Amino acid sequence: MVNPDFLALLTTLKLAALTTIILMFIGTPLAWYLANMQSRYKVIIEAIVALPLVLPPTVLGFYLLIVFSPQYLPGQLWQQATGQQLAFSFSAIVIGSVLYSMPFVVQPLQKAFEQLGEPLLEAGAMLGAGTVDRFFNIVIPMTKASFITAASLGFAHTVGEFGVILMIGGNIPGETRVLSIALFDHVEAFDYAKAHILAFSLLISSLILLALIYLLNAPKKSALKG
Image (cartoon, helix red, strand yellow):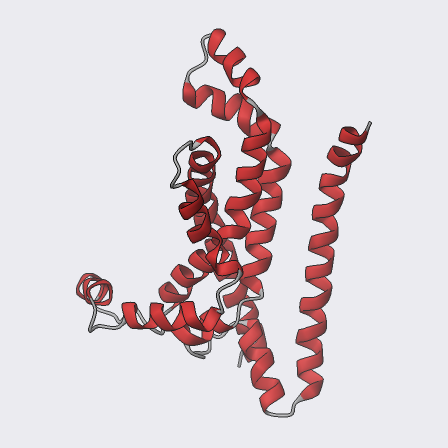
């Protein structure tokens, strides 16, 4: 029999990896759009993107749970297309994770794009590079560290999610039970030995990941000071 905590680990890694990939595909054009947007409505879009930073996860989870239910159009369409209910499924926690971790990917990329400046892009255009060429050959190489930071933060934040996952995914072993929920289960059952193992593992892995991110950005900071 497979250890339930090991299943929770696999589910967590699968969720975090898939969420990060989706966020990089969605967040990159969104960040680029916001970085170059001149409209007065920019602050509204930025506020919507950043909302998960201050919004209690249970609030987002509650409204997603309603939207995902068969009584509402998104849930109805999903059930008609797949034959399965969206709420309390792995797909539901992926969607919730993408929304809840969005600012951790978009904001680092947006700041990097804003600091890039126009001269480099204008020089590329003068040399005959198209929009796509300039993005892949100038923007991405110049902001590579920010892409790594954004992906790392999105992954780490998804690993640590609890409220949103519990609200829209429940606690289904092998499907929606992630490490944070497994930790809660151990504490609720007064099994502090297993809780300590999970908590300490999450603490150390988060600390290492953050240290690597700061290490990655350290040369850039020192170069600016010099």
